[in-house]
Amino acid sequence: NAGVTQTPKFQVLKTGQSMTLQCAQDMNHNSMYWYRQDPGMGLRLIYYSASEGTTDKGEVPNGYNVSRLNKREFSLRLESAAPSQTSVYFCASSESAKNIQYFGAGTRLSVL
Amino acid sequence: TQLLEQSPQFLSIQEGENLTVYCNSSSVFSSLQWYRQEPGEGPVLLVTVVTGGEVKKLKRLTFQFGDARKDSSLHITAAQPGDTGLYLCAGARSSSYGKLTFGQGTILTVHP
Image 1: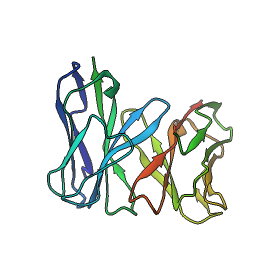
Image 2: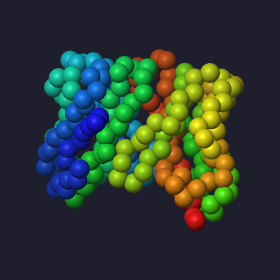
Image 3: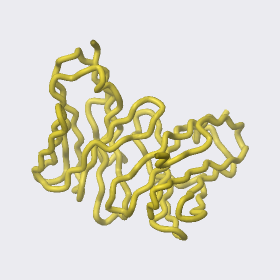
């Protein structure tokens, strides 16, 4: 009963390095989302994908790119990491825009 | 700009006490969701309220959506240590496909 799986769970990067955060869901959901969570800020939407083949910007997209590889997978890429991108990143999925969002366990990223 | 103001940000109480968490906005939401998040995990949905004035109960938790659908509250009766966690409200607007706006969160600690 995996639900939404995120990898890696922890990552430390140096400023300027790049990396891709992976997310996969096994619930046959159409919509997927990437959020970042910072203390005192709640969760903020970075990018979302309403359906396979489509992506759109959320509230804080700068410095990030996404790929909806197929219906199951939605990856988040940091091309040139900055200390301001130190955060906990959550992936979520839902059957459609009106449905409950199910969250993964998060990726804790530190950029030094 | 934080569209959903959640208060208080921190709450530390003794087992058996009652508490209320508030979620306020100047914007109208088509629905409002409450999540609970434990350390190292992603948020888990507790309830969704969609009708102005709606009240939903989940055991010792009572959720209310304001008549004007701009605010919501979560009331916990006779809190228990197992209620400890981060509580998040999130609003959805019909004009914003699937995108949730989260409050800053309330960190609740219930002491035995």
